[in-house]
Length: 95
Image (cartoon, rainbow, N blue to C red):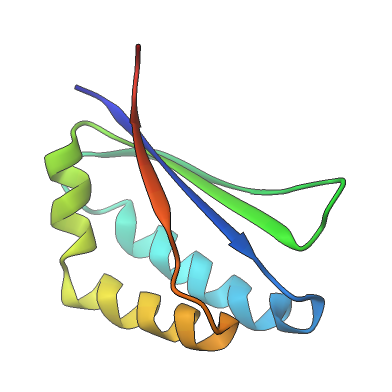
């Protein structure tokens, strides 16, 4: 079953420029992973500190495979260190 992964981050203005390269690197690596379909990064127009990444995968197993790669873990750790909080995400399927 196709799934959407929604990652919401609160990004202080002074850290936004430092975050963008990490997000681009994750996207560039992610597109080559088995099961990856698409991804987009959105900024809340009413609260510019809120950044949402939505990615679509062929299955939850494909997403979990990507989450467990050392490359992704390393970048994610750097993001968490930069923002000072652990990134949380949700896995959603179609009803």
